[in-house]
Length: 190
Image 1 (cartoon, rainbow, N blue to C red):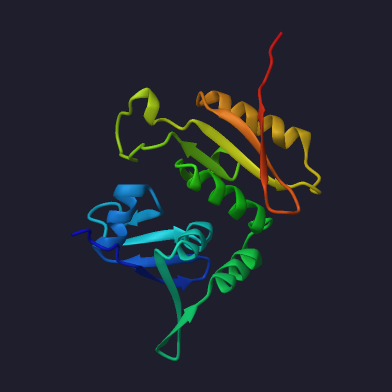
Image 2: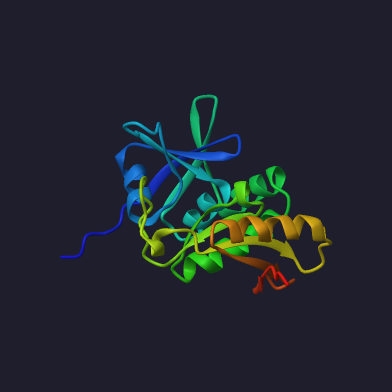
């Protein structure tokens, strides 16, 4: 008999979704979603809105807000709206996140590398401590809608940071139909 996957439940608090209990922590251990908190003996999982929207769309997470001590369920559109209100170009980020996750990659935030996401090879389990070469960040991905303007110095800085950690920098351009196109950008030194 095949065991059915339980749907997790998380509460939207500001611009994060908190999933309490061991089931959320297990989701991180198995699939790399979110961040277990506290670091020592975690008892909950903190999800970025892009992760919560993806899991909600896939039917793996129910999201609610508490109003007057009552839980009010949120729809996918509500979480996308919350993301758009708190994050610039959230729709583009979601489309790229969804595409990469659907392809089997582990996707985490990449802000400290000057981009939206850092991407790990398929099947990598995120663990603390020394890592083998395939467990390191493979790509650093920045997402933009096709009509967006961008700063070349900003792009150059992100490419350098990606190369410093031996990752490939990827510029993900999302068209009006929501389809991402990926461009690898390299730094050439004469």
